[in-house]
Image 1 (cartoon, helix red, strand yellow):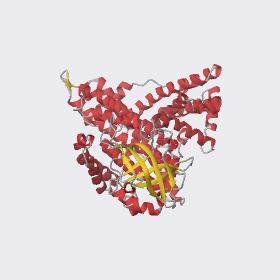
Image 2 (spheres, helix red, strand yellow):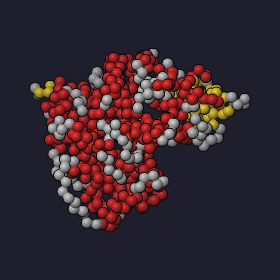
Image 3 (tube, one colour):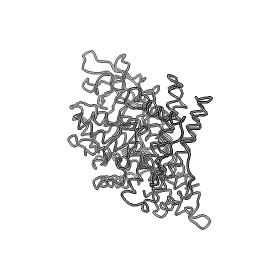
Image 4 (cartoon, one colour):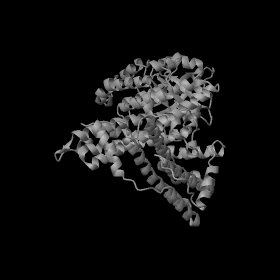
Length: 593
């Protein structure tokens, strides 16, 4: 496996070598066996029953989760001594990807294994873990996570649910209301966030349904993921034993934030799985649908869509597994330093919180694009509930809201980078000043480099310079008011997202060609170049919008010249590149990368 060389966020200021990243073409036999187990489970227990699941047939989702538990799919990340499989983070990402093809069932399973189980696994004391985790890993108990309230969504710490200590000091008495609670209709265990007395910060509690004082509203009627149980939950003088306080008093907000970091990475993995299965449906339909005496896959307009679907998915996957291995390496290094395993996992993931937010945004928006074009490829049949794209399209939309809206995540990307810079954890100012000096100096004429990826690597380096130039100028010009300039922050975030993903897909293809040959990887090479070409255009537009928002006069003119210099491209035949990618998909009759 790769050895992590960089800390989270350092992709902006340091070079990553292709030999130091993990790519999906490196799966081990054991990991591929787990993948096959998940694929068989979805094919046998989920896909044939999608209509019944969406109709919320009584007991069906619970039985699916029971079967997943028997196969060990609910305990992938749980240590063996607590009844799980004890797999590493990257393997858990692979299983998340495959389960991600399961529509509403994927939501139920991921909510149980992620936000339902992990707070107890990572923050529980030994007694709590021994009591709850084995039954959650086996599926004997089902779990949910109660954070959101009617008046507190993105501002999670403003929740009103309250807990007070009983007169005898043996229980917390919980009162309040939670909403959008996934698995709420059948959960046995609720991780509930509430403020004790007049505390400023949330605390977290492990609440068993058997404690009483819990009532549920009817199932919510949703646009998509209709088979996922989503309820409002009311706590009315619910008595919680004091030993069921999770972690320390007032630590709930930190728990929520760290669990969301995990959820963001996992959502990206699930979105990749859903994107791949949607592309396969699109390709098969394009090969089968005859118009004007030819399959529609023969037409350029359809090939464009298929190639773009695949390119964006391949790029998103590249970034997701690059970050997943970085996280795994960070966890390993922290464990080697003597940190407790649960703390090492949390700290390792927290270290890559910037990348987690990037992946969440990119993965969810890639899936939305893939789903939308899937409907278009199917044409009229895509709009019919008789075809598969109706469900794909509706189910994809929630991912841009789950785990923090994409707008919140964009703001977080820049906020976290700047905070790390201010703490001295990330040296952004030094590289930003170098870019500033480069702007007023003559462009350097380095030695000619005719290696395969020299041009693309220079482009990615220049993308980073654009971000440093604009973010540095924005910080200097706007100072403390930058946090209120959300449009500018989102412009910078979009540039960071495109840069990270562009670099990731480039590194993946470079490594893949070193393992195989350029000829064998022709489609992948074309996808990398397509993505980088497109990213360059997006970065230019975002950069121009940001600069025009806050700079003026000579400073604006100089930076616009710099922006043009750093986003200058050679001529590139995108149509030909897409044809290569589309032809590979069409000949394989599925997503095949």
